[in-house]
Image (cartoon, rainbow, N blue to C red; front, side, top):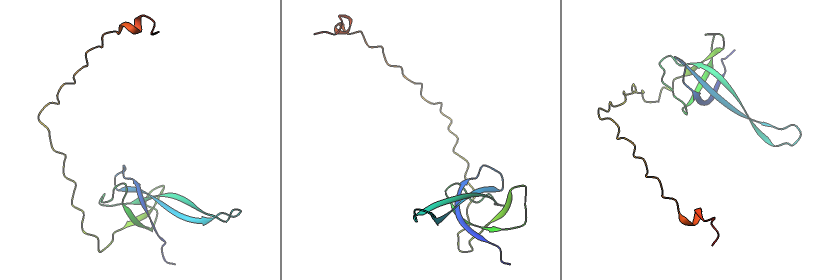
Length: 116
């Protein structure tokens, strides 16, 4: 029996070597006969931490890798290799201090009751 392949969008990459992929499907409502979007999230194995939130990926069924991880991310052969992320630049200068606004002097019309 062939392994299932699904297509979805990465919604979380917070875990090491794991991404959470949301797969959407459209089904017809039994009463109203309109198409409704249904989605389900799958935990998929990403060995190289290559994919990040917002990336479109294809996942394939596999043997159980952990308690809730039974899918692996397929690598597209035509996709260019992803370079490792660059470290953020180090800023040596301290941020400028915040300036405070001077308090407004009270208006005489407001103290008199505001009736003109």
